Image 1 (cartoon, one colour):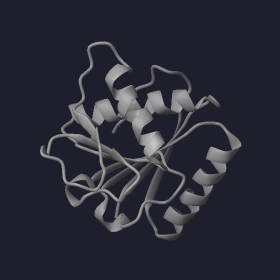
Image 2 (cartoon, one colour):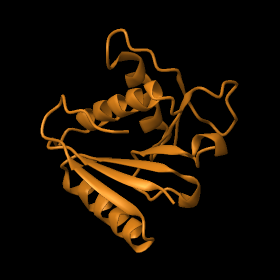
Image 3 (cartoon, helix red, strand yellow):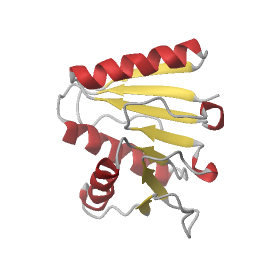
Image 4 (cartoon, one colour):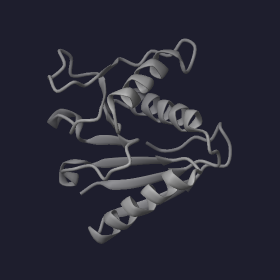
Length: 151
């Protein structure tokens, strides 16, 4: 069963939520974790794909949008709205509004919430689902942009 971490941002900005996700993805990648970024749609996956190329000058994170076919490389970050392929289920960053399926395969689940009512309501629902399953949950309120957090 996964360890779940909620990151709660002070901003209402969806863009800031995505940028914070990029920072967590980069930290996970530098730590040797090739995570899966779960999104609600192909459009959201494309936004994250584009941001990972541009969010920080000089940063390189090998990544691709997952369309259901296993990637050629194992050492890549995958982004998609489908269920993560088996090798990418250890660390999952959830940007979707749903609880990921097959929680028993995930070791680390990172939830990023902005301060919008819609995002918070969906986050509260997932929090309750994780609680009901007996998962270990931690919550991190992000005060400012330059905070560093364990991935």
